[in-house]
View 1 (tube, rainbow, N blue to C red):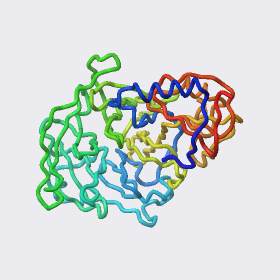
View 2: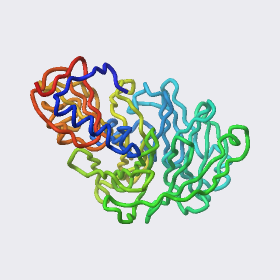
View 3: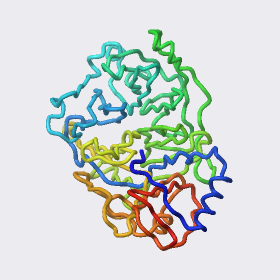
View 4: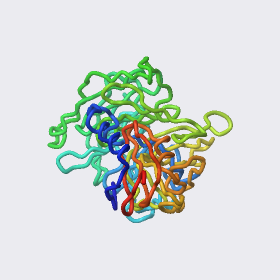
Length: 395
């Protein structure tokens, strides 16, 4: 994730502060892995209608493919394909499976996919998709072939809009409204890998609390994902909520229309915009056309006819950028860049102090090589990275 990383030269005061943080901060804090993807970069596709737009529900990925769900279909798209390409279905490597052509689900009444997640076990990748229409539950598909494996019901749910999986293979889901806790299920992956039935065993749920520790009640829950380190739970519910998975306490919440953690949407008349699925995938290497960042979230623009729907895919990063000359780190290309805040790759801060003022627990500050004659104290858990050579701060 960190290319061209060099060791920066810091002032004595900053070194002392950083050493204090490293030596004395407790190590069981959710942001230690720097997975707070809160800085909004922009959108791509914008008003997209590439075939997967109609009733788009969610997305996930393996190492080289997107997996996207519509209400009644599952797509597999190579990461190097443009997600806004005309006739995407005809592009090399693109596959689409219709729910109605999966008899094990269709004959049981299932007619709705939700926001999926990906999990690999013993060399085999799986797509986990929440299903509705029949008894709310979970369907599992092979990631390589999109072949149906099995499905099982969520015993304690009346809806199944989303599913997330942690690094140990535990599954999380909830209803869509009045959500005060996230349900947790255990899967015997070894048994499933060896051809046995999918069984969801109920584990203790994760109660949800706001920043002050009071019980929270979420409405319109549509998506969820767990950070790669397994410490943060991102939930899409009238915006983006970020929870410490071990405690259930909310750490961050997106805004709508302003600020650095911006997820703007307009529900109801006349736009009927709806937050949908979410995934985490580091795409700063540029292999996904017109897409950067690590957190990617769908917004669906609903129309009277499903075929007239359109999607906006919003992208976020955990990195705050600093360049003393203000020059962009790289071009935004076709991504519609968010220009209302500083600190993005195309509108970096000029000073480290400005980045430090914006920083949150779990952020990274990437500083272009050069001299920054300033003194500062870092009081949050941040990772400081020098880009392209030696960075001197305080001289």
